[in-house]
Length: 342
Image (tube, rainbow, N blue to C red):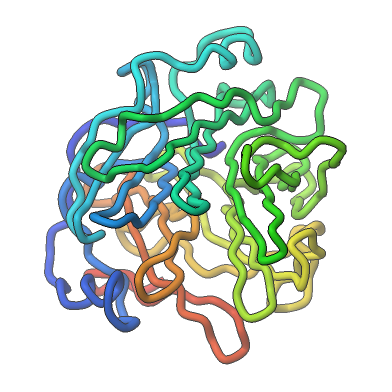
């Protein structure tokens, strides 16, 4: 389940390929994913490019700093530094919905509409679907001070034991018609969609949930939506996360002509029937890539995700990659850095 683990320690990826790194976030599209540097210890990353730098958030560390969301910042999207955590207490709605205070908050998602930044995040405990998705907003997020200025907007939606879905792993998409959508879900019957009030950011009254993808109770989670070339693409993670070097996470994708589906993979299989096209799986020291989310750079669409580093005992590490759109409209990722290939 996405967001289960909270990990400690400073981590760094060492090596060359600085030229490829710069291209990945500010120039053309390289043949290799960038080699990132600095403090990369993050799980379930979300990345936002702002004037003056990048902000990343991830799942909180279990039992540390109240388990609130972790922050990283970068001037160039290449070298990252720890920026602490978001708040000293969990929002009041969390304990009310869960009936307990969980060890940490999970799987944040940053989205910007105009100058306002929307932060969606998850509260749950491992193996249960008594869960909730919350919202905070920021009028003008400063990458130099990313932990201050947030306003708690409360609970967006929740699930409980007996429901067929799990209300975690949120990701927002605004469409050209002025509407806003929230994808979410983990295990159970898979990925769901709800329409949002685009300004307030909460669920739009009178709307119902829409099923997007399912594996019939098998592992699927971490949805992220992006529109390209007349299609909406749904990225998800299959299989086991949060198990260090035993993780089997892999990044999958499908697409639809409508944000509400149906989503099909490259072979025409429905994602509601277990379909999905693989775009990245374990290779070499890059174990269990997943927990992905799309973000924008100066040169186009990119994907942020974590993997468990085989050279560091399974520590979760931030990786970013440009999304390469093929002539057929399907996305791929460049080769992994340091000589590895997906």
